[in-house]
Amino acid sequence: MRTRSLNNTIPDVKSDLRESLLHASPIMAGYFMVAFVFGVMCLNVGLPVWFAPAMCLFVYAGASQFAALALLTSGTTLIPILLSTFLINSRHMLMSMYMAKKISSIKMSGLKKSLYAFGLTDESFAMHSQRIENGLSTAASYLLSFNTFCHLAWIAGGLSGALASQYLKKFISFRLDYALTAMMLFVLVALCNTTGKRIVALVSIVTTIGINFIHVSPLNVFVATAIGCGVGICLKKFSS
Image (cartoon, rainbow, N blue to C red):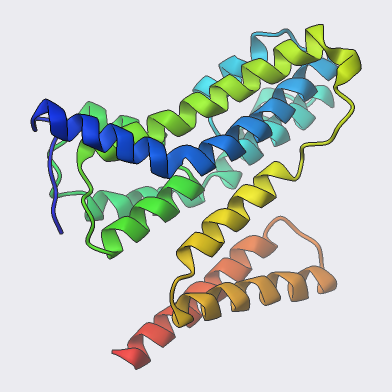
C-alpha cells in the first residue's frame, strides 16, 4: 500500500484534494440534504437559526442530532441526552480503533489524528477502509480533506435548512427524509463489488427485516451487523 504524508509536494496535495472531493461528492450531497431537514426541524420546534449549524459543527452525528432534538423538544434533561448520544455513537469507538491501526504508518500529528477521528462517520469509514483494503493511496491529505468536505456539507445543509425554514417557510412543503437512506444505498452498492460482500450485505438486510418482524428496536441494527460480520469472517476464512 502506498502512503504519503502532508509533507509531500504541493502538486501531490492538490491531487489528493481533487480526488477526495470527487470521491466524497455523493456523500456530501446526501449529508447536505439530511442536514437540511435537520435545520428545518430545528426552526419548526422554535430553536434559533444558529442552533442547527452549531450542532452540525460540534456534534456531527446524524442519528444523535435528530434524537437529541426530539429529547430537547420533549423537555428531557441533559444527562439522558448525553447518554443517548453516547450509546448511539458507541460504534465509532470500534471504527476509530480499526482505522487507527490501518493508518498507523501514515505520518500525522496527534492533532491531525484527533481531527480525523472526529470526522470519521459510517460513510467515510466504509470508503476509507475499502480504499485501504484495495491497496490504494491513503495519504493524510486525502483522508483529512475527505472528512472535511463531508463535514462542511453537513454544516452547510444545517445552515441552509434553518435559513430556508425562516425565510422560505411557505415553499418548504416537500419531504427529504429519504436522503440518508438513498446515500447509504449508494455506499452499499459501491462497496459490494465481490460475491462475498454481496452475501454479507444480503444476510445483514434479511436479518434486520426478520428481527424487526419479531421486535422493533434500535438495537436490531447492531445484532444484524454482528451477524453480518460473523458471516463475512467465515466466508473469508473458508476462501483463504
